[in-house]
Length: 93
Image 1 (spheres, rainbow, N blue to C red):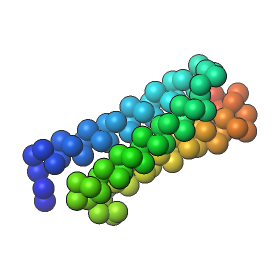
Image 2: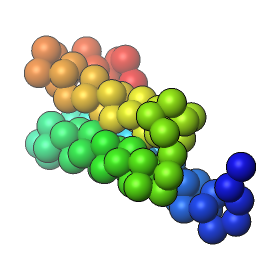
Image 3: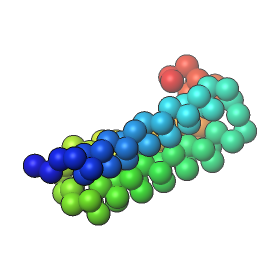
Image 4: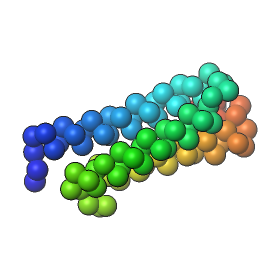
């Protein structure tokens, strides 16, 4: 198992995903006109972080990789629900 800087890099990537999602949720809750764009950007950040995990030597079955993709899917759900009914989304989040 790799340790040291490798683990810090993975931790930082996961934190970036978490922060992107957290911020997207905050913006959506405020009914900002930027909500859709931010949810889309959030998903892109998380997918990029997942790709970075692979570049660090993770496999597609690693927990960090999967967690980054989970965050991407959560961001996409935000965007999807915004299209349906933004007022409903505020209750869900």
